[in-house]
Image (cartoon, rainbow, N blue to C red; front, top):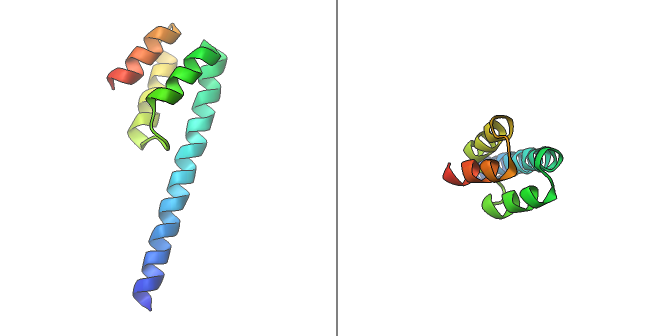
Length: 80
């Protein structure tokens, strides 16, 4: 029985983490839209997996502040 409870908790933890990453990705897409426009946000959606890995979220966040154009931003995100 304890094994079932442990697996349930692990599954719930994974779902929560997935939800957190999806929420972070939504915020980033909104910020990208405001900074670089809808086209760049759409390109970002095609580049990132769903839900994005934590290191992808960090990379996108950094690029959002460091890049001056949408093209530069997408190139930086793609390069990893």
